[in-house]
Image (cartoon, rainbow, N blue to C red; front, side):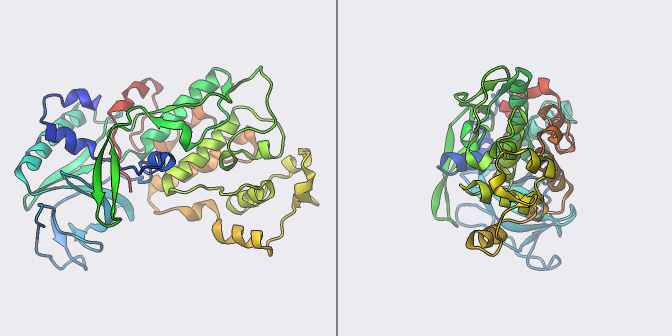
Length: 397
């Protein structure tokens, strides 16, 4: 959608806008690296160095980038953490917004070069029109929160779009479930971008080339293991790391096993690593208990896999090397939060609801689309708006 709205703009606008969002080359990383940042950002212009009261002289490098570093604070509010990405237009910085409870946000700072400044002005004009036409973001285009000219650097504040790809995934799989179909093999590798075009930029800090995806519209793929309700259900389904407990315990499965997989995927989108990194059933269950609490006694009583339990509890030696590994590498789910900001807690509330042990208590995807994480962040809960996803862009960490 956004593409069509900027046909009149210069090629620099197109390039500037599409550099939002980075991916590295591995396919899994290519998916989750675009999704890790959660909050929205607002930027104003005044750079403060170190403490939030002492001004830093404004300097540009030879390419026109604003010189800033970790610890610098903008507008006595936005503390720079790291560089998210760098392109021909300028840089995108990860910041902490101290007026939003420490929310991690992103700041797009345009080079002090006239052609890029003019491109940014055109982009701002388009984004302002979008905001006017869609103040509640019902049509799911990216939202600009604010902009300003800071000593020759156009700065634009954007809503970040982590919710949007998660929403697409829930919407797509809900359609399958409404069709009495279970995918059974949801994982990042099977969630692909519609448009694989990218631009390339060099990350100075990491000393490597990185890709900038041009569109965050995705599609769910690989239906080789998909199963209709009336068909034979194999005992074991799903790739290990995304496998639901009822599958491990051979209690039978249906659509809720997909919801569990999505919960694992959303966690991976947020933090960039797999929640359950194991290849062993007993260890997998131990990780679940470490992160989510004890396996319900009802499931233990019903399972045929009694070899994993002793006297109604998981038979697991915490003093063993495997036990030490789980203890050191897993922790209760909420302790993985990167911020106490509301949207972070909303996401984890959604993930927790998707990672309910008992399938009958697990959140349905119909209900997930109405979750406050989507409602409150402009993700949109109207399934009819799904066609507009191609207008979305994303900034990665």
